[in-house]
Image 1 (cartoon, rainbow, N blue to C red):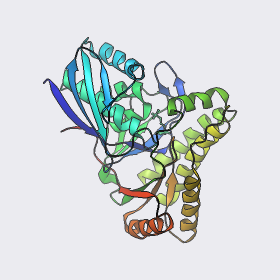
Image 2 (image 1 turned 180 degrees about the horizontal axis):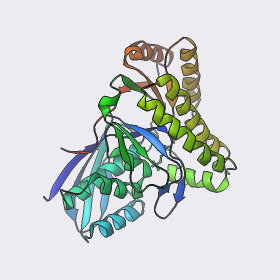
Image 3 (image 1 turned 120 degrees about the vertical axis):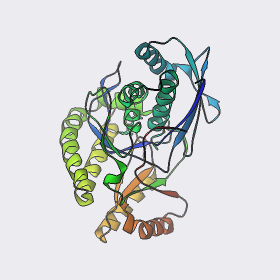
Image 4 (image 1 turned 90 degrees about the vertical axis):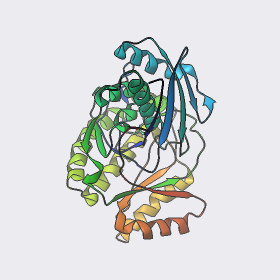
Length: 314
Ligand code: PMV
């Protein structure tokens, strides 16, 4: 095979990974629980080349950003060839919509399968993790976990586990973030006084989150998700200098979810390293919820998503 085209969906965490246990190998400091989304995706085409290059949306990316990933991949797969990758996403890159998860997952999957069709998902997940730890999860479909300090992610449940679960993705701003999640989490680890308690509390949230997901219990899962993302942001707010990814609309959406819950809707929001807000809900309530959100926030874009498949060759 001389060329390959693959597709992966982003991995959106219900219980967050934030901070590294080991910088050199990019091992996560906290255990995370995530859903791989179907409606958003990245497609990456890879060919063999005499130099490693990655084009995202037609633009050449900084080679140093990808060097540790390519070096590790070649070492682990015992090859010395180079790769030319061209990647497109159907959602904005680097805006906190988990594009690095689908991006590195697609890149690792394409390069590994180009070299060896039999390469296992466990190995590819480990290769992807070096680029972006959340990418380790995006190789698998449905619901996944990446445990603290684990080399690769694991599939927990297939997408059929909870067919009624929906995610409303509210795009607040599409600009690329000013500070990368890699830099922000390192700043939190080294300067936030709350970082040790975040790491400690995360393990409890993770265990309880897995149990609530197993039971398909959104009333139990929602508050755990909420605590996870709010604690994660607390480490950013208390970093030196502080990192503020939120925009005024992010907070308005958080408040709107509070109001919706007080009216009896199961609408549980989460956020990542960016201003976007993702609202978990059930299929039966997704239409009135979307209508309400579109009326309240006519300037924003909303997309309805659900659990999808893992990485695939097109
Ligand atoms: O893998 P990275 O560097 O893109 O880290 C992103 C981490 C969060 O999206 C904020 C949380 C998560 O677990 O996906």
